[in-house]
Amino acid sequence: MGMTMTQKILAAHAGKVTVQPGELIEAHLDLVLGNDVTTPPAIRIFEEAGLETVFDPNKVVLVPDHFTPNKDIQSAEHCAKMRRFAKSHDLDHYYEQGEPGMGVEHVILPENGLVAPGDAIIGADSHTCTYGALGAFATGVGSTDLAYAMATGKTWFRVPDAIRVYLTGQLAEGVTGKDVVLHLIGQIGVDGALYQSLEFAGPGTEVLSMAERLTICNMAIEAGAKNGIFPVDAKTVDYLKQYAPQRYAEQNYTIHQADEDAVYRQTITIDLAQLRQTVAFPHLPENTRETGTFEAIPIDQVVIGSCTNGRLEDMRLAARWLKGRTVAKGVRLIILPGSQRVYRQALEEGLLAVFADANAVISAPTCGPCLGGHMGILAAGERCVATTNRNFVGRMGHPKSEVYLAGIPVACASAVLGRVAGTDELPD
Ligand code: SF4
Image 1 (cartoon, protein in one colour):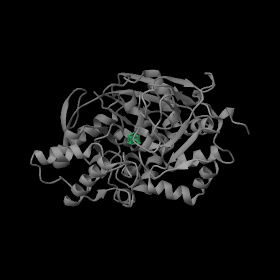
Image 2 (cartoon, rainbow, N blue to C red; image 1 turned 60 degrees about the vertical axis):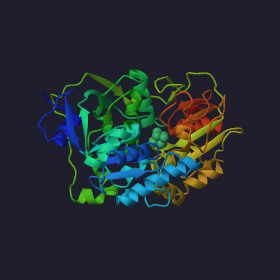
Image 3 (cartoon, rainbow, N blue to C red; image 1 turned 135 degrees about the vertical axis):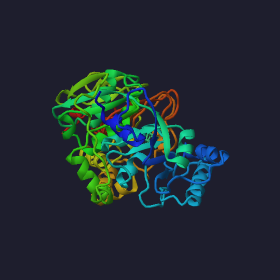
C-alpha cells in the first residue's frame, strides 16, 4: 500500500520503510516548541521527573508570546521561569521581547529558518500544524509530551489516515487562503478530519502563496486534523532560500511526495475560482457563510493579526484595503504584526502609516486578543471580526461576546463599514 506525505515523513523519522494508519510509532523530532502557557508546566514535569538536560539546545524552541509583553504578575513569573530554563540549558532559540527574531511562535519559526520540508515537529500549542505549509509534519501536543520530548528528542504517534483536498483553479480578487480554509471547515465541520492528515494536492496548491498555505495549515486543527500539509514546490524552495538560507545551501531538507497509490479516506475537490469571501459566525469555525448572504451585523472591534494572518503579506493586504479609508465611528481596529520582522518591514514599507491614518491601533507582536489574553478583550454583547482562527464562546473575552472569523479583506471592509461586510460593499 502506498503512503501519503505525512506517512512517509513519519516512517523516515521512525527509522521504518513503511508505516500503516493506526500503527503506533516512536519518532525522532527535528524541533520541539513551547510557549508561555504550556512551557511552565512542562518545566515542572521535566524537573520533577529528574530530567537534567535537553536533547539538543538547538532544537528546543521557547517562545513567550501569549501574555507578552507580560500582562500581569502571573505572566511575568511564567516568562521568568522560561527565561531561567532557556539560560540554564543554553537554548539557542529563546524568543522573548527584546530578542532578535521575536514574535508569535507560528509566525517566527518559519521566518527564522527553523522549519524545512520533511521535518517532524511537535509544539505544545495546537496550531503547530501551521508548518505543514512547508511540507513538514507538525502537530500539537500537551505539556507532558513537551517535557519528555525536550529531554529525549522523541515522541510517539499513532499514524494518521488522510483526507486529500484537491485544489483546482485560481482565487478571485479579494478572496484569500483564509476563505479556502473557512470554506473547507464549513464543508466538513470542526470534527470532519478528526485525527487525520489534511493533505493538499492539485494544481490549485501552486497558485497559493506561502503565507496562504501557512494560514490554511494553521487552521487544519479547526477541522480536528492531526496535521495539514502542502506539497513542496518552487514557491516552498524559494521561501526556504529566503528564510533558511543555510539549510537551503546545505540541501538539508527532504521532499516527500505522496505515492500514486496512497490511500485516502476521501478526496474533497475545491475549485478555488468558485470560492467567495467567507465568514465563520459564532461560535464555531464551521458556521460559515459567504459575505452578502446575511443581514447587517453591527460590530464593535476588528482584530487583524495572529499566527493565522499576521504575516507581511497580510499587512500588505490590509494596507491595500485600508489605504485612503478610515475606521467607522464606534469601531476599534487593532492591528498586530506577527513578528518584529513583520513590524519592521511594515514600518519601512509605509504600511503602519496607512494603518495609523485609518485610525487603527498598532500593537507589538503578541497573541494578545486572539485568546482573550489582553490588548483587546471584548465586553458582554460586543462583536468582533477577527483574522484569528477560533471563535468559541468567550474566546476573545466575555462569554456573551461574539467573534466572526474572516480573512484580511473582509476584516478591513468590516472595520470601515462598521458591520460584517465583504469588500464589494466598500465605496470606491
Ligand atoms: Fe494561539 Fe492565537 Fe497565539 Fe496563534 S495567535 S498561537 S492561535 S493564541
